[in-house]
Picture: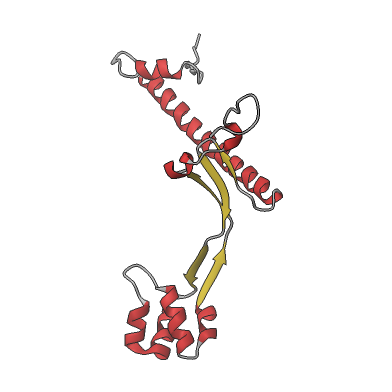
Length: 170
């Protein structure tokens, strides 16, 4: 009679993780614990993606107004991402239009300085070349950021207990 390997539930996983330190615990058991944790990590990633999409839809439905959950503020941001369409063609064109000195000012250690390239091409009368050489995209992204201590210090008077009688607490 063949026995199936024990598959721990999420509830007793912490207890079984402690068992992994025991040299008598089988390698199969360790592998099962490891696989279970990897599986849960992947599920959490899926849940986070689903949550983020739902939060985006809610914010859009509320005319873009973000919301606060506990100490986290969620809002939609639209960062701009600029990429070079073809590195070789881009370098060739920038060198022809701006010369070696101009091209050097548009390059950084890891990529192009897009703002500098745009400005220099506009100043040289070649503004339309930038759009041909570079691709600019905007993408809505959910941003969750912790509320700072300074923001937490502000007091919402709706939650201050009012004395019986008239007037506000002073």
